[in-house]
Picture 1: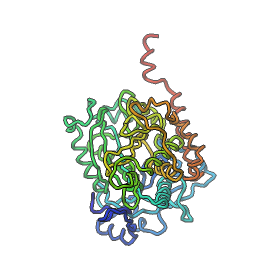
Picture 2: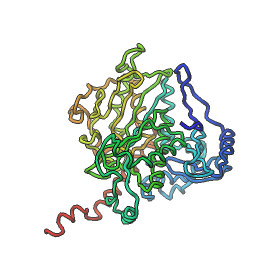
Picture 3: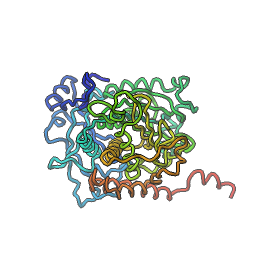
Picture 4: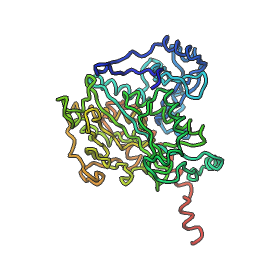
Length: 476
């Protein structure tokens, strides 16, 4: 990991957790001067969990008032239109919120000379966290975590596809025909050494870029789909894990373009290929030690805390699932044949289950949540797992019986919402969601997902699909 990395969480030599003070503005100013920085890219998280930002001078970045950010920012949709949410109305006048840099996230920008990057928290004019902001929501979860006496470590596995970005690809993108894109790999081959040279230069450049951002990657590997790769990000505290995931996705796309490729995290680009997931590996720490392990300090297996954590995640997973599957395309991925769960099952080292409990050793004991696609909202997905688990611990919720073998066929397990509309409705009706994230947030986020579903339905009915025309054009 880069020596420039700052973090608010660390382990002392005796293995207990310790907290570092976040860098001051003066310390940030000194670092920017040391790096000969000319501009700072201040970064924010939008409603979809994507990284956006703008470039400001040093004086503006260090100003106590923060950087103005229109309230309308949280209404922007994936096509740069507007979601049908109240803050998209001119009746509000589109006033500013203010982005306040979190200097613990200050890094040099890969591939940009004299530029630094910093992720911001967003505040109202009175200094309160903006409820629409996903990073603020995860911060509140982290406060609840600390109040309950825990720290956490989150490891994110992200899968993605690489496509050739040649002249033909540019034409396909301009003509809005991305199905013509050609994957970098032309065979299905998992954990391949033989196929690795297809991606080796890209990975070499990506590895260097993420190191500049202070992101540590445990492993890279090829995955099942044509041109499909996986990166396992090293476990870190929750807010840092979400920041790393958001930054990784953006730098992955940047490095891919520099290598004549297009990197995509769309959940299901091809119905004949595997979808791409974002698996959340998570464990709780109490006084620096894994709280998911039995208390005797020797045995492996599930502690009472771990059981109740799993029970809470199971109990709340359906109503919060829209954070893991936030787009219409997300639901195309959900097919048990491709290890993408449709029910809220759990099992011991069972990849066919939604929640995979791993207890091979005390150091590796953790929960892997396998529902989310790579299009997930990193901040809200992590928050939902932690809040569900804390709910289970506080209320001593025992999980149902574990599923063995084909967990997706376990009729005892509750089904997830099957569509984006259903998932948005589940969040809108969630009492716990409103308690944890606020009614303003729940109403806003649920409305943004309904708006996304409505946009899809309008487009779906506007043209005849290629397959349909090809089937009937000449023979009818």
